[in-house]
Image 1 (cartoon, rainbow over the protein chains, first blue to last red):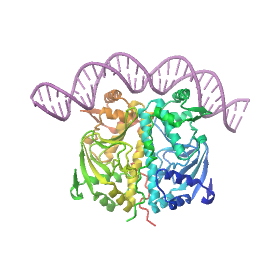
Image 2: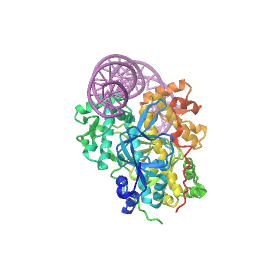
Image 3: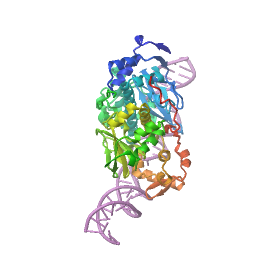
Image 4: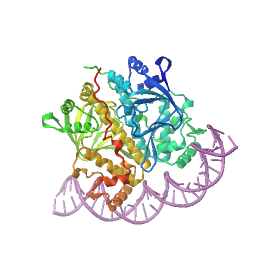
Length: 255
Length: 255
DNA sequence: CGCTTGCTTGAGGTACATCAATAAGAGTGG
DNA sequence: CCACTCTTATTGATGTACCTCAAGCAAGCG
């Protein structure tokens, strides 16, 4: 847990790149984001960033590793709701509802940049474009949540898993991560809880996908030799990720 | 389709009440919302408000009736993602992404107030509190989407349906709708597509819930004689609805 | 080097789906 | 007001995609 000055730490540039996937940001705005005071912290596997009910005062950006968001039912069943990849703002919704309604856990050893909510709010107050970019990022997440509902609600097991893999591979690629990293570091238990299946069934589906050459596997990793080959069997349509975003006039002149 | 002036039409007051469920609004802000130019339009059952891929220029507020939001898989399976009750802002996400990623359909004969996106954006630019309130409404929706993922992913059929009924009854109550209206106007096909089940199975579950006195039924309506009795078997926890909202300082002074 | 965590595979069970047929309304036109 | 159609609800019979239980194995780790 060390405080960094922007000069020595490019962490928040990842956030800039990520926001620019869906929103235009001037160089001035980008600079303001990179200059935000923040602290960088390592989180070990399985450590909680936030538990349901916690009151938060900071927002986190994932720098490296993987984080997931989940809820647990009254019967103790876990449902993973989101998988975050490097660059993702993790819990910027806490800017608006600081008491967490989900838990957040490091799925892998991860590095995070923490920004004080007050600093973020000040920045967003000063820059409508940044404010819009954050909101748009939250809304893309929202669209992904809906797609996950479709996934667990109306697709069979193989399609569900293929769809999850397609989504992650595209999101990783969009973040500019190279192919070694496109290897998806998901345990079968995580895939099960993300897709509403049992670990046993996930295992069988993976075996079958491997036999059909759709995926490769190595030491617990899943790799996609050809991500585009998987899309047909996943019924995958990337519209919901909003990569080719509708251009809205973000920089509307203040009247 | 008639243009109304606020004096003769209280439509948007429902939106004010709805936003105030999660956000503080000054009387001045409330007044500004009620004054928004808008048109009121009727929609017949099953008519589409928006289809996936449409570019929108207005946002809708549901005044009476019911609307649902859904996506269709590559195999043609429908998953309902959201059910809107009177007062709900339906598609304010289109302020930020005007090309729809979901379809919206009137589930019942409905009345809607349409507001030009530009007018809304101007109002939000002028009032940070309104802007925050809209974002918070969008984030509550997002939290509901996540709960639906939990619902279809990790709950059994009876629990799923009970959970859906609990949610709707609470949301209707929050909107101040009386008991006649708390009768839930859901077809079994809608309940099936909202919960990821088949219509046949929904029918059997309803039969069983009725036998256990958890619900009453009358002419296609479902009624909850005692909504709180249903919560235990639904594993229902209303935190995700954010009714007892964390007080955030919305009216932060501009510096 | 034992312990834990994750992966794998088989056997058996079940909570759902699908198919199919009937019934009950609800709206429509004559 | 009746005949028509269309949608929604209901129920039975059958099938299956998934789950649970259980055991064995591999690998990382302290």
